[in-house]
Image (cartoon, rainbow, N blue to C red; front, side, top):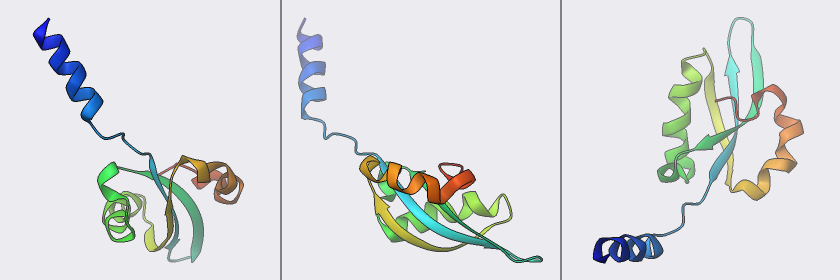
Length: 92
């Protein structure tokens, strides 16, 4: 019983995990292709610098170069960006 109470107390004291997303611009060369996308980020990448480090390798694996992180936002910003991101909505 003591262990169960301890676990409950620890869970109650833990900070809530906030969903973190970024919208970004990327490119491919030869021929030049550009895209705007939205990506989910790990909780430790909720700043532009950290998002760049997390997202650039994911895009590079598919031949894309990250140009910039436009903004960092929570789940409340997903719906308004979905149409603009099209096929690149939560793809990377």
